[in-house]
Every structure is written in structure tokens, then in C-alpha cells.
Image 1 (cartoon, helix red, strand yellow):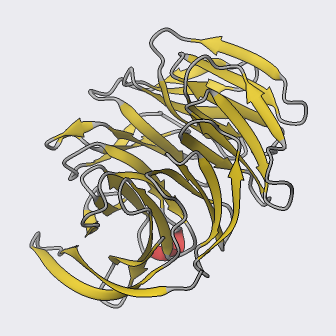
Image 2 (cartoon, rainbow, N blue to C red):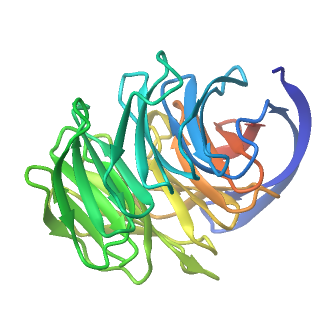
Length: 343
């Protein structure tokens, strides 16, 4: 389970204030760790400062120490591809969803068998969100429904269905009873978990909304769009507290943007976000102005499927063809994103 030293050619793009784009093609040594999966990785999430949890087409959930480069534990129970993972804050517990219509709860310190199972959807489960106190779980599916579960008992407490609401992602607002949801009907909804009803609908976008993320303070959220050839392919920043209007858009990808995250405030002088796309690129943006600060092209990775913050300077990016990429922001030449490992 040791580390292999390898070299990978990749491109980074530095965006100068005068509008000139500097392209740097570099061949840097990086760590090629033992692979977490044997097939496409669909989703990756950070469990703590050392471990991530991932899943994909091999139907296996994997806990991986990305600092040491080794598998900590494998969890098997799903019968089809893993679609979503949600981790419980400050805990060793997490949930996985699958195309087998099931949601399972796991404990890193417990058995390799699921601690709890949640069965209630009639199609693939495409959304998972855990309440801030970890007592409730919200799930969404392509069956147009959202279900609210009691984590302790495994019983469904609420069920609601909205026509054409093919769920793509769910995210619980920190310290609030609200759940943010994106959909294939191009709509972003804010749900109140107290009775599971729609509290707000954001202005409809022009393309399918693929993913959403809420800031740590709960004041803002990002959604991202499908698209092709630069049409669509954007991320959008929304106000969650006051007007609930669109604040900023981030355009520059050429294919579907599959994931978006708020990066830690300690990373840069200004607030920044990151996006990953099917165009094999990860971009860092100035949250306030929409300016692209850095672009990393992960050559040969295939579509990038998921993005997660690992620590203050590191992020994890799942891909179709090359597993999971460990990315790090380098401050030596400005805000530059580079790949330091793959597994």
C-alpha cells in the first residue's frame, strides 16, 4: 500500500489583473497512491482532516486516508453505483445513496455492514442531506420526491412529491431547519424541514441545476448548471438571507459544471469558490467579482464528477477515468492550483 512516485503533465492558467492569461505547462512529480476504486468515482466527501469517503461504479464505499495514501476501510452493501455521500459533522458516521434506490448509514469504527438502511424511493437516490444536529436525514430522488427520516429509528417522518422535480442534489443549511435542493427542472428550491414544505423558489435558470452548496455562515449558496460548448456551464451565487436574489455568476467552463464549493476563508485575502466540470478543469473564482483566479486542467481524467474541501489548502476531486485527485493551492506564485497526488 506504498506510494509510487510519478510524473504528470498538466496545465495551469494564471489570470492577471490586466486580463492577460498566462499558461504554464508543467511536469511535476506527484504521489500516485494506491487506488481507492477500480472504476469511475462518482462522489467524494471529506469525513475529517485526514480521511475522505468515496463511492462509484464499483458499488463500494471507501474510507481513505489521503495524507498517508491508503485505504482505511471498505464498505459493501449496495447493489449498484454509489451516487451520493453525506458525512455527519464531527463524527465517524456517514450515509451513502445508490442507484439501487437504497440509502445506508455507516460507522467507520463499527462493522463493515450498514448500521441503518433507509428504503422508500422508487428510483435512484440523487440527494442526501444530514440535519445540523444529525437527528434527521433528507433524501431526494428522480422519482420527484423528498423524504425526511428519523436517523435513530430509520423511519420516514415526512414525504412530499413535486411534479417534474427530478432531484440532483440536497444541502442542509447550517444551524437552520432549511434544506436547499437543485433539480433537473432547472429550479432551486428551499425547503422547510418543519413539515417539509417549499419555503422559497429561486428564479428559474436556463439549464439543469446539477449541484448546490451553502456557505458555513448560512448566508449564501452556490448552484451550478449543465451545458455544452460554453452555453450554460456556469455557477451562480445566491443570497439566502435577505433578498434571495442572484449575486454573481461564474462563467468560463465549456461543459457541465458538476460540483461547486466554498473554499476556506483562510485560503486567500478575498472570499473564493471552486468549481469542477466535465471539461476536465477545476477553477478558482473571486466570489465577489466573478473573476477566474486560477484554472487547473486534469489531462486524461475524463469528466470531473465531484469536489470536496479537505483542509485549509487542499481539495479532493473525483473523476471518471483517473480516480480521486488531491489538489493544493500554491501561494508561491499567487493563487495557483496544482495536483499533488492521485488515488
